[in-house]
Each structure stands twice: as structure tokens, then as C-alpha cells.
Image (tube, rainbow over all chains, first blue to last red; front, side):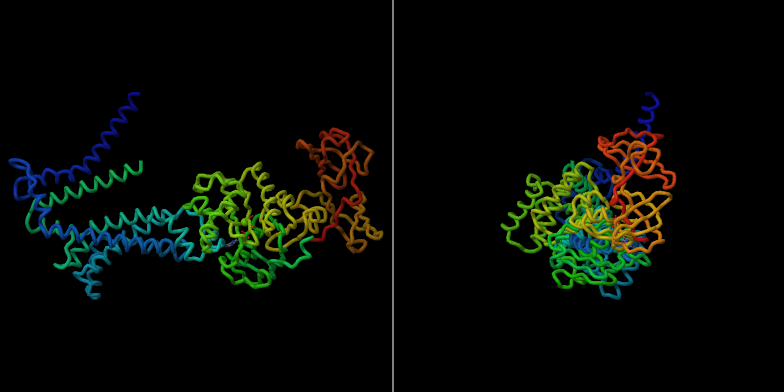
Length: 258
Length: 360
Ligand SMILES: Nc1ncnc2c1ncn2[C@@H]1O[C@H](COP(=O)(O)OP(=O)(O)OP(=O)(O)O)[C@@H](O)[C@H]1O
Ligand SMILES: [Mg+2]
């Protein structure tokens, strides 16, 4: 028994250490957000909610938040629609060309974000999309597409190909088959893809910095500028709220699954 | 045979399908009569699924025509052909309940809701799945899924049902039960069945007519009894049941009786074949048409070399000096002797037991 439990202690300690390594840097924002000072640092004389109040009343912070949310939803919807159509199309064909197309669509994940952002910048200048919502939405949709198509592919991987034949033999057109039979089977993948796409857009900063100036400000951009210009602890308050929100969403997800 | 009198519901003329250099279908001609139970039988890779898929519209023929009620459907898309199809893997829609699966063909045809509900219930009751309407396909056993697939295929009242090895994934007992059900469903509905199988027993027990395929060609077709008793080629004689093959010389003919000799054994065969005297002939002799007896009683002397006991019958391999090994299958309660390896016996057969085969 002894060696086994020593083994267990070793690995459990290791696991907790890794978890702490991942989580502690995140948690440091919580005390910082409650600081009573007007610069970033740990609380000095007591705790204060003044930076939360500042966040929730400041027009610029709220508008940046709202911008990120609605851009995220639009991007997630667009990416889910396009990515699902792409994946279902490839699944229907399932030939050599569709295999290659799948790989090409996944390439953006492999390209360094800065390179991609530079690419967007050069191209968006020509298209006149610099500093527009459309430009940001388009760039984020392109970044989110691979995630949607990967999760939809995963959902369709185990679907019996004969069901297309079955549906058509029973009188359904290609279109009816896609809507009534294939899309419902892809739905779990579409939902995962939607969430992923939203997160990709909501988090994205590099491209936004390259392709926007003053016209569009998203939450990550606001935080970034906040760090650079004035070291305002409101950033910590925002970060804390985001961490809490993520925790709540994850908890709800886990509870619903069990 | 009875069905061949009527006008065919479905005709296939000169169907050709090539995959590269492989002929999956090699000039196939086939007529299907209304109400017939037609079975496509053949070994793996013989083109059964390809032929069925061509009928259903999932495979484009390289050459040839398919007509339904005398109208050309060769180029029609599958959804216009109005065939019900049952797939080997069932292919139920995984995200729909059993009820919605069966209702699907009616919904795409935009039938009235009340009609859909009635017809769906009727079909599910017909396959004894009425109590499972609200289940999802993955909550059903293989046999139950098969029944649902059948109900779905017939809910829109197609005139022809296409079935691709519908029972092959089921165990033996369940398969036998479903064979009876399918057969009675066929006579109840009066629908034409085109049934694919590689199981010869299934083909013999269910079909009005069997079409034997090999390498994309039709080898022979006919009623089960005709095919079994009058195979034309070695392939058919061997594939449909077992046969002993004997290469003999033709020595004479009396009206429709052909006299042949092989390795000292004489065979009289009834045939309308007009082979020349002096030619070779290949004969097929079914194991169950051979009699086994005490030495001296029957024509040929032989020696038992192997016995396998199968319950209601017994398979015996006997060795004859000239002819070599012969397979004899006899009802255990009928033999006067108890065959055991090494036992001296005699074997015989009736005059009409032998069949002359065409050279392959
Ligand atoms: N899509 C395809 N591409 C290339 N070859 C094919 C294709 N489909 C079938 N074939 C070939 O055509 C031949 C006939 O195939 P088919 O599926 O009709 O056989 P089958 O009689 O149904 O066999 P089984 O009893 O194994 O189902 C086979 O040799 C097969 O390899
Ligand atoms: Mg097949």
C-alpha cells in the first residue's frame, strides 16, 4: 500500500501545483480590484468598491463592453452559419477536394496572430474597412471559422452516410435532406462552435489593434489602452468581473450536463 | 413463373456500371413483375448493391436504361422514383423519434397532419412497433430498428420496396422470425419486393424468383425450385446448395436420356441438351439425392471417410475409387446403416438426380 499512496500524494500535489500555477495569476486581480488606491497595487488602508463603481458608471467602459458583446454575437452567428454550411458541404462531398478544403480552412489557427493581423491590415486598407465595425466583424469571423467547422465536423463524424440516401430515397430533395436530417445531427457541434466563436471574438486584441483607430473600441482594446496610458485599477475590476462571469458560465454548463 | 405473364413494373435493359476497369454491372437485363418477391443473390462483390442502388437512383449507370411503368427513369433523381428502401445498417435518422422517422416520407410529401398520424400508427402497428413510437433509434435493439426501417420505407405506400441485406446484421433466430414476417408482409401488402442477400437459404425460402449474380453478370434466374433442381452452371450448382461435380464422357443418347461414363461409373441423365456423343459433360449431383446403403445393395461400392452429424441429417464423405470423394447427405432416421469412418458402403441415385451443366 505504501508505495501506491506515496505515488498518489506525489501526483495529487503535482496536479494541485499545476492548477495553482494556472489560476493564481488570475486571482491576483481580485485583491487589486478592491484596492483603495488610485493606481494598480494591493489595498493599503482598506477595501473599496470604487473601481467597480467607476466601471459601471463610466460611459466609455460600458460602451466598449457592449461593443464587444454585440460584435461577439454577430461574429458567432456568422461563423456558425458559414462554418456549418462549409462542414455539411464537405461531409456531403467527402472527396479529395473537400479534404483539402478542410485543411485550408484550419490553417488560420496555425498562423501567428501578428502575421494574420498584418495581413488583415494591408488588405482592409485596400477594401476601406479600416476602423469600421464591418472590418472587425469580418476579421473575427475569419478567425472563428476554423473552430466552428472543427466542432461541426466532429459532430458529423459518426453520422451514417446512408442516411442521405435514405432521406432522398424516401422523397426528400437535397435541400430537405440537409435541413431535416443533417443539420439536426450537426446541432451539438454548432452550439459548441457558437460559444467558441464568441469567445474568440470577445478575447481578440491583436487584429483589433491593427485595424481600428478611434472609431471602434472593444473591451480588450480598452483594457490594453488603460494599461498603457493610465494604470487605472478599473482594469482589475473589469478582469475580476470577467473571471466571475466565466466561472458562473462554466458552473452552469457543468451542472446542466450532470 | 406466374409473375412473368404480367406486364413488368420495372425493366432494366443493358445496364453497365464501371469502376475503373472493374465491371460492377456488366450488361444486365432484368424485368420485375408487379407484386413479385424478387431476390438478387450473389457472393460478395458480385454487384447486388450496385444494381439495387442503380434502381434506387444512387448510382448513375454508364450505359443502359431503367423504366418504371414504361416511363424512363434512368436519369431521374432518387426522390422522384417513389421506391421505399431499407438499408443494411437501417439508416434511421438519429435525431428523430421512431414516429418522426416513419412520418418523414409523408411530411416531405406535405400530407395532412391527420393522415400522417393515422398512417404512421398503422405502419408501426403492422411491424409490431406501436408501443415504441416515442423512442429514439439508439434506444432500440437491432431487430426493432429493422422493423422501424421497414415501416418507414412503406409508410408512403411505394409500389416497389428495395431491401439491401436487411437481416444480415441480426442473429440467426431473429433472422428466421423476421423472414416469416417479411414474407407475410409481402403477401399482405401486394407490394413488389426487390431483395438483396448473399444468404442462399434466405433466398430459397422467401423468393418468388431468384436472380443469381456473379461479377456483375446475371448467371441464371428462376423460381427457387427450378434453380435448385436445374442449375445451368457449376457456379450456380455450387452457390445454391452443395453439389458433387463429375466430369463424364457422353457415350449415347435415347430420346431425352443421355448416357455418360466417368471413371467406370455409368450415369443416365435426363436432359434436352443436344450434346454430341463423344463430348465431355459436367454433371452435378446433389448430396441429398445420393443414397447410402449396405455394400452390394446400390450401384457403386465406396468407403466412408468422414461423418458429420447435424441432428436431423448426417453428412458423409465417401470415397469411390474412380470418382474420388463424394458428399452424401442423408436423413439420420432413414439410413439402414450407421455410417462411421472406414465402413464399406454402397451408394446409388435415381435417374433424374443428375444435372448436365453448361461449360463455364
Ligand atoms: N464506389 C465504388 N468505387 C469503386 N468500386 C466500387 C464502388 N462501389 C462498388 N464497387 C465495386 O463494385 C463491385 C460490386 O460491388 P457491390 O457493392 O455491388 O457488391 P455486392 O454484391 O453488394 O457485395 P456485398 O455482398 O459484399 O455487399 C465490387 O467489386 C466493389 O468493389
Ligand atoms: Mg452489398
